[in-house]
Amino acid sequence: MDCFIDTDFKKAIEFHGHRCPGLAIGYRVALIAIDCFPDKSQDEEIVAIVENNSCSIDAIQVINGCTFGKGNLIFNNHGKHVYTFFGRDEDKAFRISLIKDLSISNSSSTSKNIELFEKVRNGNATEEEIKIHNQMKDKKILDILNFDTNDLFKIEQVNMKIPKKARIYPSIECEECKEHVMEPLAKKSGSKTVCIPCYNEKDEQS
Ligand SMILES: [Zn+2]
Ligand SMILES: [Zn+2]
Image (cartoon, rainbow, N blue to C red; front, top):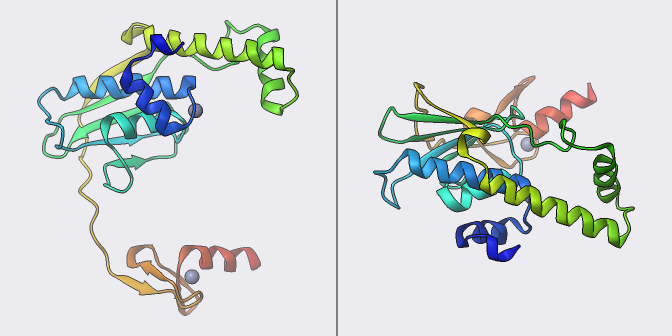
């Protein structure tokens, strides 16, 4: 398998901790994003808005340098394989959505395959079954790496309001746990100003 994989994908595997179809999807997305901004130099930021938090995001962090810490990775929890990229200083945004059904339950899967997948997931597969499963997984990864871009994704240039860079907010002290919390995220609980976990705890008790 290794000889079929290019160095950048290896980097993503190293970061992610294993190779998997999800990471391969993210890797393809990351390469498309690079192509979308051919004029961007290495240290100019592109921002990614991702609509899932699956394995694929790790490839985007490694290849595109989009990370939470830098503020150029935005997570919208929609459970969708949709990835939107934009440059900080331009109106151009590209929306990349997965159009191919790669799930284990898609029409090309046999019931035997699904059964095997379940067995491995539940930890009661034999060594031989695990081997077969890994071979199938590797084949799927190679397929994803080699599919024509247009068979895998729909890529559109979209107009969107580019989110402003995150502001730095003052911190205030939560009146319950006494820990500091960014001001816009503090909540009113009765007469007290509290952090979200303390607010939720109150909510559960009532
Ligand atoms: Zn993974
Ligand atoms: Zn608190």
